[in-house]
Length: 286
Image (cartoon, rainbow, N blue to C red; front, side):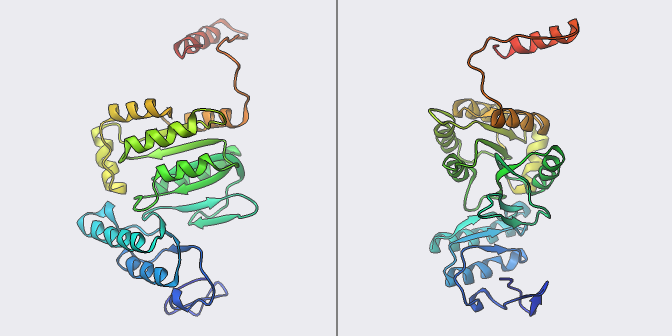
């Protein structure tokens, strides 16, 4: 149901002036209005009884004090009315399950179905990841950009993917750690014990300059990188440094049988690569 004041039809689909004018029950609202009216749109969603919302619009905490106040209003409405919120300032949500086939994002194409769940604080990175995955024929189970995480956070989403039977590996891109203890507790439940699922993470803002860039991007306080390393170690999260490493590891963990032990044989047709492979294997405990 498109909602657009001043429009009667959008792409041939009947549009409504306000969400309150829609005759049916609404499960999910996807908000792409300018940031300064998102709180009014969300208030109408609350009046309509909508219990889930995605705010894709930017212009909140990441732009300074005025944006912080806009985000506070949105959070207050969601808290008062029990609305589960993704965003603001995000790409949106994609679910490739054929029974759902939901693309609640501004991604132009639906990714292939797969066993990898991807969670990202950056929306722009998501578009690059989708292009990368399409070129490499990599599929996803769930693909979520959570942006400023004014409502649902990466911790909530990790708990969700833990219980998702269509997800075998969880990938995570973060620009800040607001709740290190909560992340440790959630990740331990996912990575340890029978049926555990590996979590791979890229944490940006490793340098002071990168931390400053993160603050202007999603309003994040990146924190000291050594603290992040310690949190990841305690949580059982595998930290990687770039996109190639992230997806190479994810593909291996999602689709290859795990080795029974740490005994490794190297077969090579040349001495040099064999020596390099030996050094690499020994350095990681094989």
